Length: 391
Image 1 (cartoon, rainbow, N blue to C red):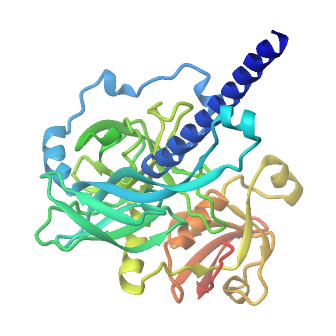
Image 2 (image 1 turned 180 degrees about the vertical axis):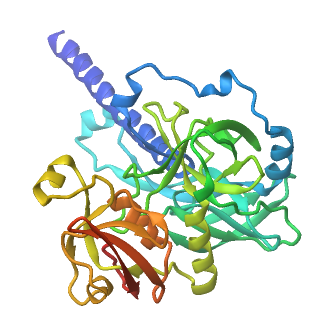
């Protein structure tokens, strides 16, 4: 009798272990599928623990006619469906292992489908989306708002900005014209258009909450992050969709959300159109993105650094090192300089400098304004090409 109860106990333990393994496999598959189809997600525990407030959109009616903007834009936002395979581990039955010993886990390929959004930017079928939407995809399908479906070809990608360019063979497609994201103002109304949770042509509204956000979510040494932050509702499936201003112009590509749950929590982030346009133009012309090098290593200015280096400002990019033989050295930049402006664009941080250089190409000549010993001076720099750039 004791042996019988011992058998039942061991069987129950084995069943529990087997069930846990199965749960892990299913959970991992779901997470991988969500990663491919969702906006990039990062945790903001400190921000989300407090009371979350919606923007003033709940209380005030904007002057813009959202119906006109939505009608003019929604047909140019497409549903991007990707097909890919993942490795799935299978485990032997616990009862089998009890009688015959441990079995080696087996793996097999499992077909998966994920989805996101994209924006048609030319009548002949060029479509911009996020790199993470089509990453690992073996087949890409594009579904228009009128239900037409096309097989898409991948023209090129730029993991450093999380942008990808697709092409479908079609003509006279509806498009959204690019707007100037640099002209956006905090508090300005915007619309987010995409396909969250596989719901076609969803439009949400919000305001620009902040600009030039560096949230450190792109896994690349040469990453360029200058996100537009909005409180428009963005959810899994919105990735690659349009952020549109009140003139119906494309000012961003919705890319990421800050959430502990993976769904809308009031923080959405879009790649600015100024970056998207440069990436798309380079991919179409060269097949890859042209990267220019200034040749400096920079730091943000903290109060401690300001005191130690005897600086007169907290704004700008502090030059910690100048690469020998670089364009910066040839132009006269020195360690200890503070870069405060490039071609009329104010530089308030090291990331601002990376973004400004990221919009240029090798051979471009730029005016770099620096503070040196409290004095303001302008240096002319001719940028050079490099496979890896410092700033």
